[in-house]
Length: 332
Length: 255
Image (tube, rainbow over all chains, first blue to last red):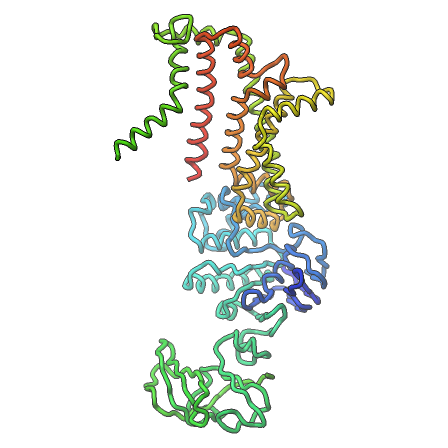
């Protein structure tokens, strides 16, 4: 079961504060979409509106072509995985996972069979009789996922589901989440503020800022060809150099006026857009790369962050002739 | 200093429990008056009390009134607490205050008020009217206990239940109430003990069928005897049992 979601000019006001400002977004059936942004950007508000926990001030939400105005959460073809899991502590895992089916009048035997199947899907087979307090955080998250998927929703909403897990577990769960989504084929709408998580799981990332969509696209496109300065900065580290009249602080460049955005790993000695000789100010070894702060000799006050190869033996004070292999120019 | 602390503790407990100990001790008095000196041990008074029909009827009445009024107070208090904890209403602070206010009003005033009201409305006094009085005094208690226990954990679980398709009454019955089982049980047992011991309201709002405290009071009018001590000891025993049950099955498990 899967369906697309159309968000049309959705605006949400809380008093005088504008949480969402005429947001338009089309989500295809079966797509894994991540709403990414800093806290307060409106991503959770948008998720709540899709789930029916909040009614938008104006605009409409369509799921599978059906207008959801005035439809309560319990009547929507959506279910939610909450950040704090929100499991029912007094019920066994089977009862938790089977709860949605129970509300739909499914018999106990059928419910238990489905619960066992869903628990197996999330790697918790044979634990149907356990209670939530006997599980670790990661396992509880899996139960919450199984519970939400058991009713075969058209759209699964995930509200920072991995936020409470430690980093290692979070990375492992990301891969699993992606695999499960592929298997069930349900549309996933996932909210997070972790850009690495977003890149790891999304078919398409929606970067939000200040109640608006700052950028939309597949991870690769968003990272390499961001369409706004905000998304360029939010998707990862970036060097921003203003360009005016064909010249940057370090010398002439053959690009239009705007802000030249260069990822640290795109700078090397061989890059095609020449930055020129730079003095290394400081280096830090990061394992997979050597992170260096450099200052172009032509613009000693400008600091650029460069990721040099792991094996580079460069000390502070050395001068390197650098260039950028890949870059974007955005409007200031 | 340490010895002094222990002495203080002993005196404090003695102050609280000496009357009860005396009451219980003289219920075994082998004589006509429950006063010193102690003349020997007998269970005669218990036998006589348990054989008395009026007393036993009153005991059953008390148990009924306590159970039914406490259950009603619990349900009403829980629903009110749930609503005020979940929904933002204009004047919800005031509503909360008004719900808790009867706690501060003397039982005598509540009883007199209800008596006037029942007389005006032509409602005949019975165990039901006493039960209504007990709901009035226990509702604030049930409300306060359950309201204090409602937290974000329940709120989120309720949200999840609604998201999974539960209508509101099922959210309450299958998620909210079971998650609050311990405070709900605590509120219920406390209400039962208060109703079980309550005299003024029961005295003013009953007529032919009476509760145990009222029956004991009418026994006292014909003078004290070890029999009254025996009844008092039985009442105390029931209260203590309830408190112990509460401790063992509710507070112990909640930890």
